[in-house]
Length: 192
Image (tube, rainbow, N blue to C red; front, side, top):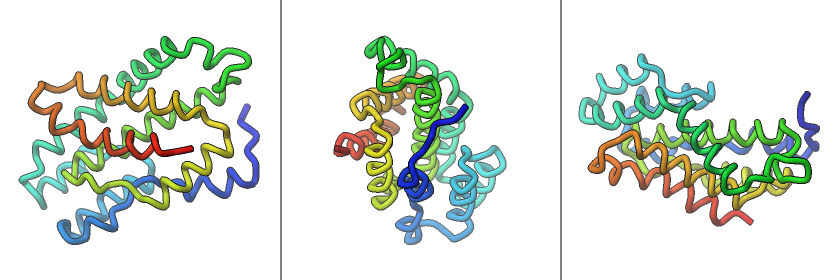
């Protein structure tokens, strides 16, 4: 069973790519950007091979790449914890009459959490806070309006993703990683 999407939603989905590597060209080789772009095009986290290739080109990113790998390896657990915490705060969200009912709406939300974490890992891996695409975010905002996505719950979910992701790291690393989450959270807080 799938969600019946309006033509407008179907039009906005491919335009709602929130990551862009266009601004990376000044500091990254085309080979590096292509690794990131291919992973994003395939909607997947950076693979071990991708991380190895990037580290061979830019050895100074080893720490960042290890952080991205740790988040990738724990993505399911992080998303599950963020979801459970969100449902504690909004217990009626997935029940009949709730904003994430029927169940396929909730599943779409949890997939978004997984995708948000994936996008954040690109910024972390590349040590680049400018990983977001303004146009993609604008289209995602329009898509969320079209689908009547509960924005407060989504922002809370992102904050939960941040919290549970940071728990994977020692305090010293948390300070360095937090801004990558904060960047996306700040953008989504501006959605109407």
